Amino acid sequence: MLLLSGKYGQKEDWSARSRSLRACGVAGEKLRILSSTLADIYLRQGHFEKAREVYEQLLLRDGENDLYRKRLSLLSEETPDTRKLRLLSRILRKVEERRDEREAGKQGS
Image (cartoon, rainbow, N blue to C red; front, side):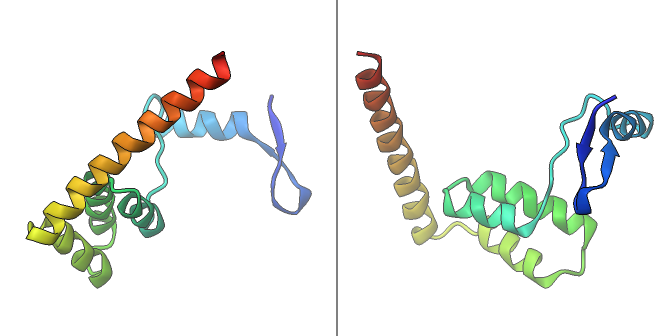
């Protein structure tokens, strides 16, 4: 039995919690915490498709939320600015990947 400290120092039985998740049919599925904060992080990192997917899931939960609807609408629009932003995000990711490869090569030497 795996016991971890919960809030206020209480011990929680995570094995039992895991069993209850399996009983609900969640076993084997990747649990993802969806929030508008996660979507915003994806946006800032240039992961527009991931951000769009999160907002779509959030709208399924709360279809009346205007913020989610507006953000999803903006992500769905294709304008010259969004094309430029997507291109710049791809270029930035490639530059960061190359930098990481160089740094990994220096550490391996």
